Amino acid sequence: MAIHDGVDVLSVSLGGEPIDFFNDSIAIGSFHAIKHGIVVVCSAGNSGPADGTVVNIAPWQITVGASTMDREFPSIVVLGNDMHYKGQSLSTKVLPHQKFFPLISAADAKVANASVQTALFCQAGAIDPKKAAGKVLVCLRGLNGGVEKGQQASLAGAVGMILANDIFTDNEILVEAHVLPASNINYTDGLTVFTYINSTKNPTAYITPVTTQIGTKPAPFMAAFSSKGPNTITPEILKPDITAPGVSVIAAYTEAEGPTNEDFDKRRVQFNSLSGTSMSCPHVSGIVGLLKTLYPNWSPAAIKSAIMTSATTLDNLNEPILNASNIKAGPFSYGAGHVQPNLAMDPGLVYDLTPTDYLNFLCTLGYNETLISLLSKNTYKCPNPINLANFNYPSITIPNLVGPITVTRTVKNVGSPGIYRAKVMRPMGISIYVKPQKLKFEKAGEEKTFSVTLKVKNAQAIKEYVFGELIWSDNVHYVRSPIVVKAV
Image 1 (cartoon, rainbow, N blue to C red):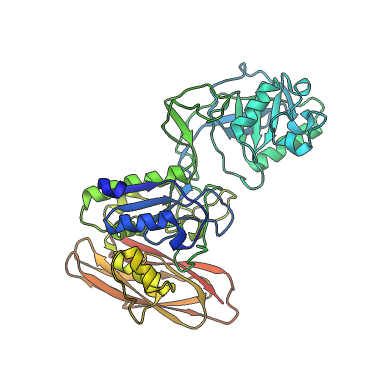
Image 2 (cartoon, rainbow, N blue to C red):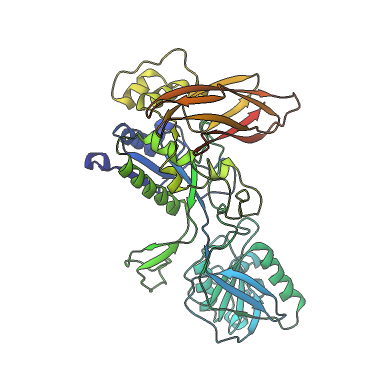
């Protein structure tokens, strides 16, 4: 229907499991959209931080991961021993000014017939009001939603809740519209709070009212939930393609539901804060809309290339973007990097592709001509010879490098005339040679082809994925492509 209506951009905050293209309804639908010049932007999924969880992995889709922005909503947890821990919240309810309340772990507040685990996660019916009433309750994040835990705490008569991250969510803090004074703290701070409770005769705590902080550092960092590569269907295509803000994103909200979508939530709000790749995907869709306004004749692939090659892999401290566990993230988390809309307006060079190139891509995967013809709605013949490594994608991924391999790419000048020189950051243990080393463009629309030869430097090379990059630069534009290699 969207194709029929003649839309310019499809923002698809949907996804299932990574599956074969011809069983993937979103991949099939978006291929037809691309044929009509419609750009399709998709969520990468919320199944991180495990590897190989990324969905929407067709090369004609722009697949978006989720990262943070430099805005936080601090609510400080103050313990009776005067230790302060910065959490976050969007709770509108506050405790009496600087009044400390008894502090209890949810595991110590369980009803007799509940397991320690169900109590610790503050699941329905697990908290004993006789033990929790009038106290600040500490719940562990996971299994059920944070606001639902707060509701259980509130039902048991608790005056406030400290939501402590588990080891998987680590430093990823989600701000939520809690029903009682509450703050979500990270994993290490949570451990300290539990230690304080277990080592203190009468533990107490206070939770400060929520404030807004702008310009927080480091930002962005990757959300723990953001689904990751490698691409399990076609490992030769790096996914996700890009990352964008997807944590604690404020936007207009339906008044048909409460902010938590829970039955108990009778509140109605015009704006809400949500997290997920469903929130990062529309950021990129909006950027695509701006690029289509500027360049109505650019293909979906050119727009995608502009977004990818202008992205950054550095945060606002000028350090490599981290994941939620404070470890350096990589292309399987963020693809080409974090989106930079203003630089995408002037990419210099683009890696272009046509619908026929996508059909040829399917051919290299071994799909037969009958099946591909069904998708293309025209008779299709596989070109011979054809090599998947030469598919003109803005990233270069070689999942099984044995002997030397040479891949080709073609770039189109969409800026002013100039000379671009190649600069390579080699993946560990891999040698890379680019030929030619410089490309001279006389006019806009001119195309030049180059080759990249990759070779394992020694037989003892690491047998896992290693990462590098290729940058073409005229000293004004920096056209960056991630290089992802696994030696076998």
